Length: 140
Ligand SMILES: [Zn+2]
Image 1 (cartoon, rainbow, N blue to C red):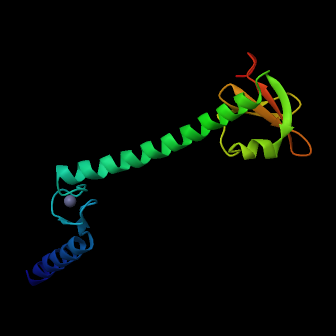
Image 2 (spheres, rainbow, N blue to C red; image 1 turned 180 degrees about the vertical axis):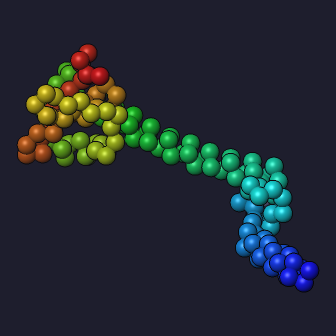
Image 3 (cartoon, rainbow, N blue to C red; image 1 turned 120 degrees about the vertical axis):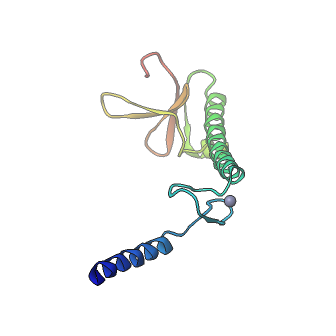
């Protein structure tokens, strides 16, 4: 009987330790949580505040990338009114072109790469020269 009580005591003690280790707080305000194990917020208000802010950040990020892509497209289109032209990279950079962003790449069978911002594209050639092109029907 004593042995059995000891086992129960040990079980209770270890349970208490686990409870202390698993102390959880609200992701928004930091208040201690006492509810369900998967609870992440103390209230609907905190959950909504947290989620709204996450969405705002994501929306701002997407908007920023979209603006860069549209600006790149606008620059390429303005410099390439006839559909094909060769110019140097400095000209593109001076207009504020951002070479890190594009919508798709078209690879030729020979392995050349055209970078596109929507329907406007370019291929880098030797000596910092860029040939600007416009989307053809064969470009997927
Ligand atoms: Zn909270």
